[in-house]
Length: 211
Image 1: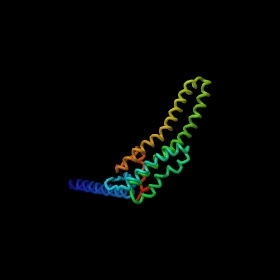
Image 2: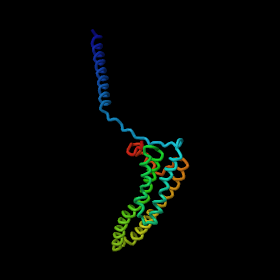
Image 3: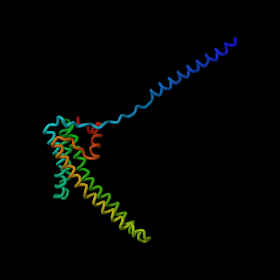
Image 4: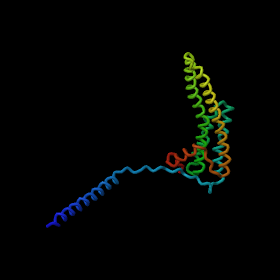
């Protein structure tokens, strides 16, 4: 008689533990069913240079070298040729996007670089110039409370730096484009800083996938 309550208690604990295990299994099943799948990050594509043909090397080099047409042509035509010449790499991309990943990638690189070196520099000059002008007016008005004596020369220095950056952007684009033209013509996979990673992500994400 004394052993019966102990047996009942142990049996009751066994049922409770079993119910707990089943409950945990049900919770895990529900979580697995309704859990949102993790987003897969698309990896950048790689562009092998092992089987690059002479034609591919030539057109990749031409895409990068066209920066000379944009920069020098823009200089001698006071910018009139830029809206046309800047699209030379894009035309090359459209020609080869289904034929060569190598040419397509480098043509897009060249196109993005030329946009930054021309349109980007002009936009920075306009937007930065307006912001600088407003800031200078405020600095001049602040002379009344003597704070402008410090703000005016400081803001003038900011304007000099802004002009220097705008002036250097086309020159940097010309330098990088020249290096890239030589490298790709020799069959190497040259990549611009930052720009190449962005182009890679667009191609890997099928937004601009060549094939």
